[in-house]
Image (tube, rainbow, N blue to C red; front, side, top):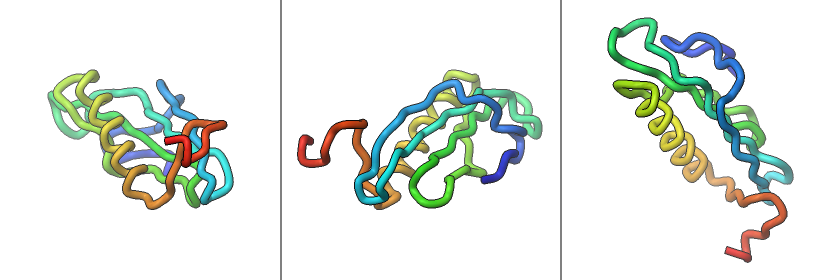
Length: 102
């Protein structure tokens, strides 16, 4: 997993995590959202890194959430991470819940 992201720097401690389970992959899946910060390469733009652990290799992205402020960058990162998880082909659910419960 890359520890740095272009324009973002270090991922650092996550500000939010969601713990899920993958029966297909046989274990926990963690979605983590990093701390939003100003883009070091462009004025007036904020970036927010995200990553997904537990479905094969860690997914860390060079495509952080972006926005005009920290709020929008955080929202964008959560949206991108959710779309990546949904498009991964690995069904996940909250811990202790079976896919049939849906």
